[in-house]
Length: 447
Image (tube, rainbow, N blue to C red; front, side):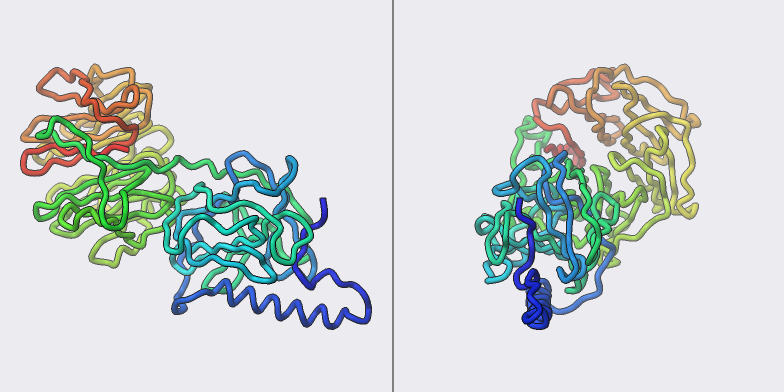
């Protein structure tokens, strides 16, 4: 397979070596301009948790050479020909621009928020995505080609921070690719769950599912959380590491909160005295973002947590976060500096509610659901519910009746404390759920 190169950088004749270096500078400047794109400069936030821009399990060679440009990477498939292979988004974002240049050929640029962008050159054809279209991590965005000034099919990949190219990281590991670095093979861990359409089903409408969608398009996500505020339903969704907010009072228009970098499927939300709060996990730490703080995603210091499940409740204005650490549910309180204390309750997923001032946990452990109460020192009691194949659980309190929601066979089931915890099928399809009660009505959000 021919060695991929950038235009104007492989001439080695002594008479044109100087011209080659000059052209290299011009090309680098041109590509830098393309990388910046439109919009004012801004200070970059933390680097998103980028994955290799190829489907899960594929192995690609990462290479460069002297004169190629700082941190520019040429990627070729190790399992055969590269031409036509699918390129996927390394992280959630939106299409910033796309087009064709003499040097880079067909290209597409993604904006991942907070000053971070990735660019893809030499595409076999124009990306099918539209400028401004949102993407999630793992979503196909283009195909590998050899357009522009290229000697063979490959992907030329760049990461920029505030318009300046920087070293690429994949799955939390630096690529090690800079000018003159030796090639290395990397296997894609871009294996995140696909975001699904979110449906709302209400208990006063026979649990009939309705797609949640608004002027900004359908609400999709790998996880949701819901709160009520001033009679409106507020839905938060996690999609490609970004957290979105949609409100029933705004026609479910799905707006990005600005939170990026959230990992896994852990998502919780609270309304505390009119302040909306979102909880998510970044690099094993629980982060809190508040509507009265411009949704700045701040580290609580609660660390070592699994990124598949968290729960949040408030009692008399004190916030409590429940997370899974080492297979046990831990409790952290805003009144205790977020010290994360082991409740002694084992589990793989957790939901929480209050009945009066009593805190109650519902925990999945080995496919069974257990209940533990702060009033009984977190004594762990089996509810009788078993056969739950997923790590999804939600819970709520409606007029003193405790309600648990799990998924079995792809359908959401409801169990009530006043019905001996019989786990009944709502016939609402989905494997990821959240629940909200408002004015006596139960609302399920499933995807």
